[in-house]
Length: 312
Image 1 (cartoon, rainbow, N blue to C red):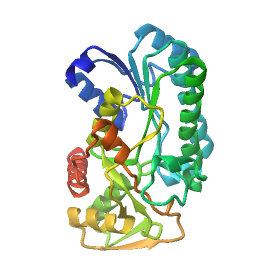
Image 2 (image 1 turned 180 degrees about the horizontal axis):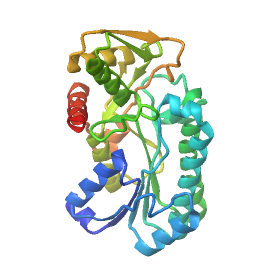
Image 3 (image 1 turned 135 degrees about the horizontal axis):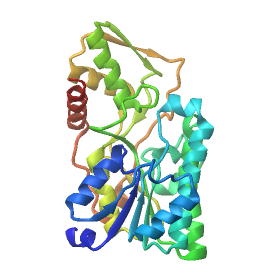
Image 4 (image 1 turned 135 degrees about the vertical axis):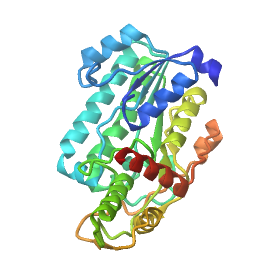
């Protein structure tokens, strides 16, 4: 893999973010010539600025990780912002990669694009079989539309791209801001705060019966690297761990790791989001030998240790 990366220049959008920072670190470790400007240096909402950056750097590969993301609450409060930001950024990147003949574009989609009541495990072919779950549909549709536009640019202009669909990601460096965090960091923070404040009852959103699948951030990065090097087909590919857990069981696992001795109650007036999520990762395993290594209990311990260390 080292020879491949040393001979290719890679532009990573969102390189300062949760996944992007780990990807950039790994690319540098592999000896890659990597360019990852911050959002203040490279405004992806400005088509001229996007095009100028690609013309200047002339990358062999563009990995488009930059996105406006958030949990159920954030998506419900500003759905138009989630749709517009992700659509505009994606279209600007795709346009510039098309017009400048970038050899390969790697687009990162989202599990939120799958239909609300999709059969489990989600196979890539079912992506178009219905509308996404309402609480994050604008975000999911915008991400899915990137594939549509990239496919159109491939047909019309010869764009070479791949499209990866990661499941819910977590790990050290995740976003713990309660206004925009996803379920694992939000839950960790809730229990840590309860222990710190002596709170005997923790209230969590939803019924606890919805299920999710979680992929450790470093495994996701390995999947992106493997696909970038070895995968060259237009069909979307899932990245996950192949296992699901209910939100209730997740809360039990996190509270046990933290040593929280109080009780947990569920606010069923708040939305669960999609009823179930679990991806079929057979295609990723076959096409580029994807094999996640970090189990959920181990990944949660690493994430909690990182968060506790940051608080110290």
